Length: 292
Image (cartoon, rainbow, N blue to C red; front, side):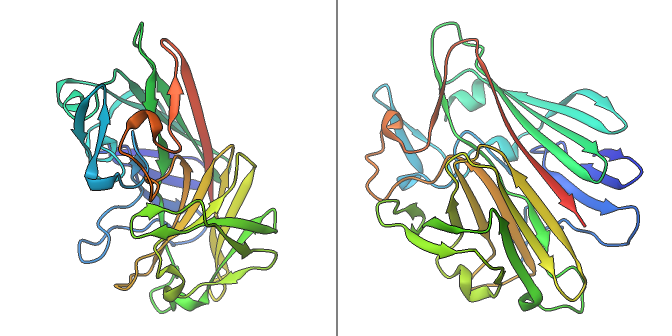
């Protein structure tokens, strides 16, 4: 476990999956990050790579071969190595090996940087393509879960979601596990949205953000605390909690990618939301988390 600390925050990161393990402020006793529960959702803040969401039949085709891959990819279940660390910053890395190439035939390096800056956690995903001749095809995303409500005596329906800019957004609806982007809905976020479990009866609420600067804020009104997730150049932001089984957490998920389309043909080169990184190139994806 890696611990970062400054005058405002103490943050822990697990080397398995490089996922956040704990977020606490120095001025209160609140644990902001969901602590995982095998009875509901065992994870806390998985990194989604090289896929976001589910593939049809958990497989895809590339260069006339079929590869099997489960939901959200494999990075979340593999160890990262610490390659740089200070009291307020850490960079962790994983890269391809014989095991990853059985399910994903590409060379890659995935680095994750966590930096404490005042009362915010700045998070960067750095994707590198070490290949000399082949483009890297991938998607990437974040999936942090937050305790909501933030007190053990609180109720889920005392939590509200607000966004900036406050506006009407296109919502991508999931049909089962797959996206139906051809039939978006309008979600009016000009005012805050009181949450209840039934809002997630079609899985995540997916905002189509189209690369705009988008901030999602979860507020526990009774506790007068919450979290802000500030996203930059995301294509989508998902907000999710379990349903019909329920648990006291809400995830805010910056995505640079999305689950297979309902009409996906299984070809990786045709898959919606994938990125293509040229040989020897690097790309960066950034967001931040601010507990209050």
